[in-house]
Image (cartoon, rainbow, N blue to C red; front, side, top):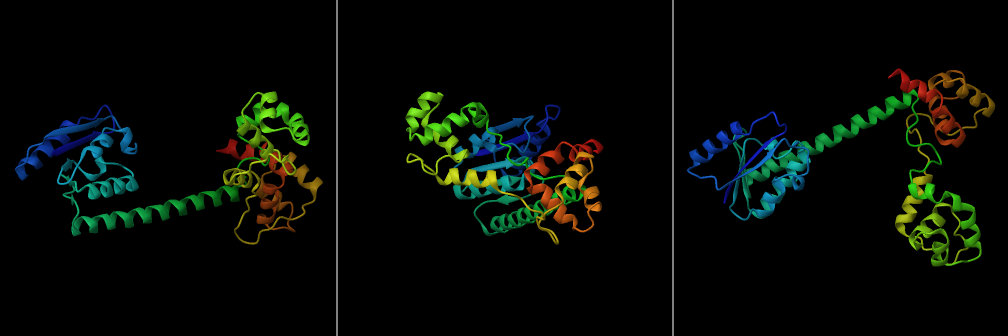
Length: 293
């Protein structure tokens, strides 16, 4: 089977120009297109399974051919293109691109091209990581605290059952079973176990069931990020002075200037990891930084 794949990313674009190129390519090879697969108004960043390309890939067999206008029609994301090429190589399907003049199958040329794409993908990953680090470093220098406020949870579950917090502690101390507690609260046993774990009531509870997933959730909720650049450490800042400076809407760079006995990193890290400083600063200096943008 010979398939023609056409994709345009907006409704204003027309697939006819691509189709003409694919048909001419097939004609030059002495081939006839058996079936066209078209994605109109679909971004190349969308997963193939959410495009018409996905079902096409599941249909192809050994010696089938896919012809497309250029390799970017398969996808805008280099990693995605690599996955598609690898899948087709395993199936024995050959991809031809009209503009790029690539022929990608299970041969040395294709493997060299795949290696080149893989190398490009790794370089792109490294560049993304570097840009991310630079962006985070800039935010830190501006005085923006990274991460969410200490002690805050996005769990709707914890908020929903918050009114049961003290009662739950009592029921755990009474060694009630998860099933009994669930009947009182109005939830299932798994929810009871999560709440007991979250609120750290289960040290002497004989029904506790901690899982590796729960442990990871706990560690993630209680980790304290640090500013690991230069001379950093959590120090004992003058508490009253620091609170006054934060309440005066000063940013961390300004607070650090007012405390020359400490490095910027020490001031930043201490405010970042102290629950009271962290939450208060987000309502003062950090809002000031955001308003400037």
